[in-house]
Image (cartoon, rainbow, N blue to C red; front, side):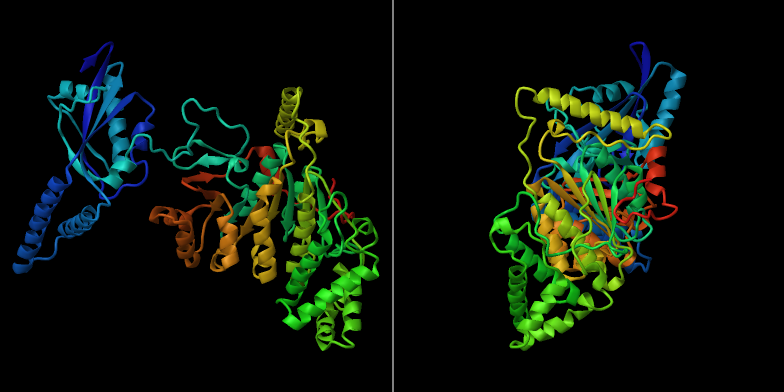
Length: 608
């Protein structure tokens, strides 16, 4: 048809695939040219649908019996249709689905007839890519064109019966991209670039700080690219003024820290110690001493691999109190600035109590490897470093395997004490808040522009208090979390952090390649349940069933995770699910893949 100053041709969709996925009309809706897609929906009354379905099942069953009586082989098409009809009849009887008569028509527009022929061929190819069979509306182009106008009139009446699920998946508003703001709503500021949508080619932009909680989990098998993805996220969170602390078991983040002027603490290196008896300086809660005692119970449980028996726990509690008392520290906050005792003092207190209490003597003997044996270096003195800044990396690579979990717990405790500090009053409130907000935005923008310039490294935004828009956001990244999660006390500590982080304007990112161990434990399930942002990358076949069950993955999503190339991930956040590929600028790529040629002499800083 000639319409106005151009031409139009209408196609009828007359063949459909047996199964459809989410947004199966997206290839047509996203076609680059001008294409009108019209979906006519006519609901069938349940009584009519049930009667028609019963007759269809009778015909299919008759065909099967006739073939069987005549000794013919089963027709796969008939068998599949009969099974589908039986399943649909069951869903209709239970009220789980309804049937609709659906007509799907496509009108292609082009300025000339030659271009129209090419456009029709492209549209038919796009439809064929999702197994839709199309035919031109021969001799009925006028009724076809009218059927795709917003008139609610179907002049072709080429209908196909569909159930609720298939029709819902074809709804024109279904899209593989993340949902945007509703009409009339302003887009929320913030967020970072995660990557490119593998289904639509769109941008995946996600703000974890706008979710119900700020936590995230990243599950992937070894070699799937999880470290690359997490380091990109850390770098981009730094652009946004977030303070980041990383538990790094393999020195993968030290080069990143050097590039952005961060600090590195190498636990296990010479003269690097963290004293678990330290009471936080600055504003502290009234029960700070009690919290230290409870943490020491957790640490001792991790060192021993289990919680001591009740008699030993009672002796340990008495020894902790006696150790602090001997150091002149009590529940009076004025005494908390005095030098804290060390683990050797606790062992000495246990030995003294052990003269009358055999359980205390047994516990003192069990602690001897960490007091005077091969593992004493980490605890043999007061704390030697108290790093702070926009990026702090706690490296545990130099620790022996027997101390790896304890080192991670000490690092998490030091990080949490910093996170748990009361935030100063919000200085952005007041008559100059708009001016301060503009200054902060300009500062972050300058830092982001600088990192993209050749030869220019990241320059963190100014952290003066007059630029802060609210309490400082903090991100804690726990890489290879399975090391800590395999210890019951360490798993409980991490679970408590994941529950409490949101109230302190902090987020926890748990990264692990051992998905099965994390999913099989109750505390691992707690960590996952308290993570509003969940990122899944390539999974091992042995773990895919457990992952699919916990995250309620569809069959297609499970197949995606089994065959995902390196760097591709599935973002799961409530009802939002999107597959994306992590991308980086050349400067970012060089930053996150760099490896330090040699370790710096300073054990507490990695400045180059």
